[in-house]
Image (tube, rainbow, N blue to C red):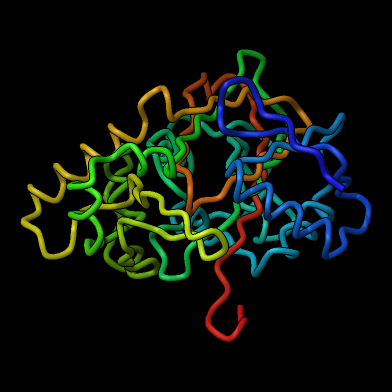
Length: 293
């Protein structure tokens, strides 16, 4: 049986009683899901980095896994990690060297410094992201998380009613442009077309509502673009007020698991051309109707 200990005054919790190197049965898996529904972020501490094998196996307990494609598309280069089911969110190239200042992968990762939820730009959304720390810069490279459930609850009844029927279009290329990445070709953009999702998400297990926003969200469907953009910006400012935010200070061996349908997150800047950072993410996707992946 797992135990959950709140982390500071935040909404996240540390998990004990879960060994990813040992088999995880259905009861333990369901306990973990219940913990995620309660806290939305669960941190598993380990003395050493989790093996890629155990990291992937844990992710597969909860659904199909996303495959990394965009960094190869943008850079025209190979991947550093042993499988494309491990999403590379560090700053090391395929030779293990720190990305140079002009490496397109570095520009791509700059978008991670904006508030976002993973994979909102695809029709098949991400549920859990599982980020494992293999190497952490000495000054730290924290990640901040926003509780989109609490942010929703704090809205006025009038605003809740207004958002109930609204959806936004999400595009990875929109957020990357905002983050400063150079314009990509139409052929590259076609590899990841935009997706549309409601601004309010409902947890199917608990019925709890949360805001579903992201830096990937470019505009609100059916609204003038300026008006929709202003609404999205206002909601992100609201949702990322200090009372809704938990800041995670990474240790080597940490695995942070967050629910993308109930949180947003962003990386905190560090000197990424000086210090190596090796972070590997497994991203679980929603199951398609009928249980297919």
